[in-house]
Image 1 (cartoon, rainbow, N blue to C red):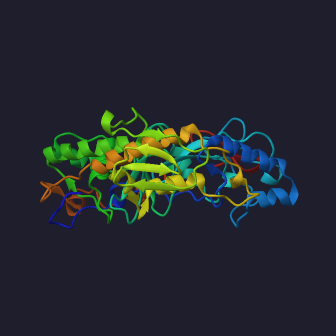
Image 2: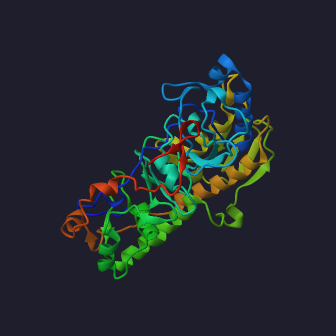
Image 3: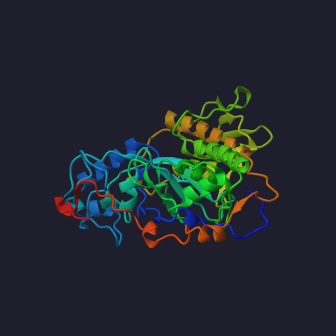
Length: 386
């Protein structure tokens, strides 16, 4: 984060004006670190009858077995039905990958009947081109960027695009063009996001610059951060001597996690992974160690007899691979240094953006775009009219 002498940096909320509260599950069992458990949980739910099905479902004021809701946008094929769950049968909707906690990719049954507040407006724009910005209040780095739908709270979610297919950037109208007049070239939406990622402050202000050299340095840092956080291209690797490996086999069901700072080793019971640099172990979001939270999500003992209790009997090999990659990502992210500028050259201030007519943003920019491009199935198979 550059050190600047002015305090007229624009707010992220003005630069990316459309935001949505993150989805709220309301019950834990529709999400899991593995997809197989979700299908088994669904099968157990639809095989149960009467009070047993209701108890397994874990009803809330927002969702019961009798709640009528539509199909989530973009979901089709087997499963994802719209009849009330009290009568539901058939196969499990195909699980999808989501970001359930910071840097923790898990799986979710994408069925609105199971989710207290699914935020359909986010699902309508979630596709291969979309990039989500999740605010992480209280964290030193206040933004987490992901290609997956983020489900963690409490911060807002800001999609980069307002329409599917990477159309209509969620940027203040005229922002990119104004930056272009200062920089000599109009930045692409992903470039603006890279700059925001590299420079956003904990108070969610974003210092902007019209200096081309400073802008390029910010883009290099920001795109590196985006690549590591999104993890949707070439997989990141550390140099050979620093690459983490399993040095002692992990047990079939580890229950404890311990870090030895002197040995730079991570112990899962008697299993051992090294080298694990201290910066990976110390990496926190909101005061919580990412590695500890990731491990706890896979070993915490669920209440017996609940759907959450249906889980792998032993530690899957896939989880070990995911852990090794997570250690790598956290190590590389921790090594990145923010822009070191005693004073940001050529600042583009909120006052300047106001004089240029970029701010304040029009009210329509803070609301979702009308993106209904085909019929959506409402409750009990009716067509939703939007």
